Amino acid sequence: MNLAEAPAAKSLYFHFPFCETKCHYCDFYSLGREKTKSGDPDRFETAMIREITLRGEAGRLSAPIETIFFGGGTPSMTPPDSMKRITDALFRYASLAPEYEWTMEANPSSIDVEKFRAFRSLGINRVSMGVQSLKGEHLLKLGRVHDETQAIQALDAVFSAGFQNVSTDLLCGVPGQSTADLKAHIERLTSFPIQHLSIYLLTLPPHHSMYPELPNENEQLAHLLLIDQEMRARGFEHYEISNFARPGRRARHNLVYWTGGSYLSFGPSAHSYSKDARVRFKNVSSLHKYATMLIEEGHLPVEWSETLSDSQMELEKWMLAIRLSEGFPASWLASDASRAKARILTEQGLLEPHPEYSDRIRATARGFAVSDALVRELS
Image 1 (cartoon, helix red, strand yellow):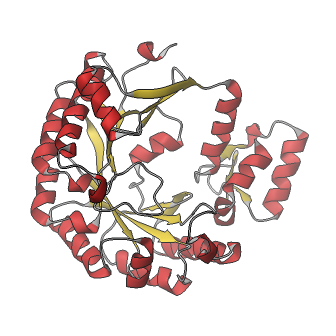
Image 2 (cartoon, helix red, strand yellow):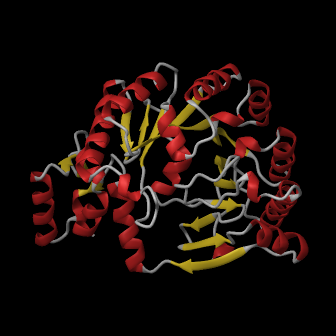
Image 3 (cartoon, helix red, strand yellow):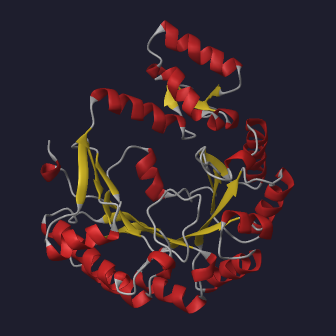
């Protein structure tokens, strides 16, 4: 099957590249105000509507949409009237499934009640807010433009605007951060009725100026294990390496990625994947080139595509299974050698029999921290 014959996508991602400032640790394609020309937001809107139109006319938006994710960048910087024009273009071709999830990422400095009421009126029903820290010195070190007071006020505004499904992000492994800091952040955030928390370990390339300041592996592990303990104690399930959810509030869109499902993406640098065709493709990582290809040249801004081989599919199967709390079927350990490796990893406290499913094996909290090593050992 080729991509043109693949079923229409049920999960959509939209990449909004604009940020107030570019965070030095961020690997995603984004543009701070200092690198954004005054006309770029309007040109971006025109280009994204054109991409929606081309994909809609090709029949890629005919299935009821189950999940939508507005990511970036900082989508919440987009004015609601611009967002409405983009979503109006989408719903000329698409419809929402009855129980849909529609997430928008947001940063505290771009949140106010009236704007978020307008976003909710469009159909957005989930907010993922990038807090990262509630300690001023850490926020300064990370180059964030908000402070701890703004973060708390932003959470108040999101709930006041009527959102009930709210997720927040934190970073751990920040230079100078202690387990006491993390515990205090978790206590403060979970004093709100948040349904989901993502906590990512700060990773930097060796050439980064802050790299020598990163905590050592033992300190990083202590952070990760403390987070697991605190979140479980508060009734959250640790369902993915970096993600915790109240029962029934897992991030459905991200689970599409983590279970190898199909998704169609829009915007500069956005990746798409068709499970049926086994094809992954990526848009160009340049706003200027993205807009030029769509507006002036009139064609889709695809930079590259690949058809996954059997060996790639096998590796991804393991990578995805290890990162989820459901783990993998014991039947995947098809040889004496693989079963012996799994026994050793279990003795080391990195794997465990699944507590609910007798035929499955999963990573422990300690195993999540070394998931890459588990994949190398088992795949």
